[in-house]
Image (cartoon, helix red, strand yellow):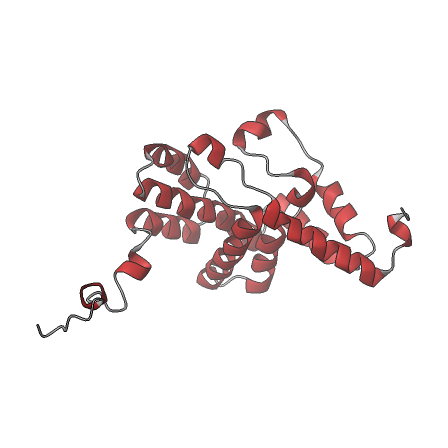
Length: 204
């Protein structure tokens, strides 16, 4: 097989995109301990990026930079897999090295490694918001599992909420705790639809 350094830039970009696709096949492993729920890293990264976008708007921060940090925050897991909180006690991964290898020859390294460095240092508001977005996605999932009857999710939620760093993240976390995960579709926009679905008129 030809050395990766000999591959052209466009080929390396395609390699990178294929690597990103591996996140769809990489499970988040903490749910094995929780007993219910499941997701892959790509699913987690998508909503984390959306949450980061929302938090940055709330805080008046740089929306693009916050969102990009969220988007790429778990990219290394395409190669390392997801280390849950138990695994982190025993296992360490060379995450920066992974990103260097993943972006080598693509022309993307400066941007992505820059986002990664900022996120890891967690000194800027945007980095703190991105870290909160990561936790808030987890909090939303745990709240759903709690709503569905997993009492252990409630224990996990207490610790997850404590990890939120910013006032905007805490406000959002508090609201998550007060909101049923199904309300967005079950209560509206027309609550009476559920009674009328069999063709029954609202006047009857």
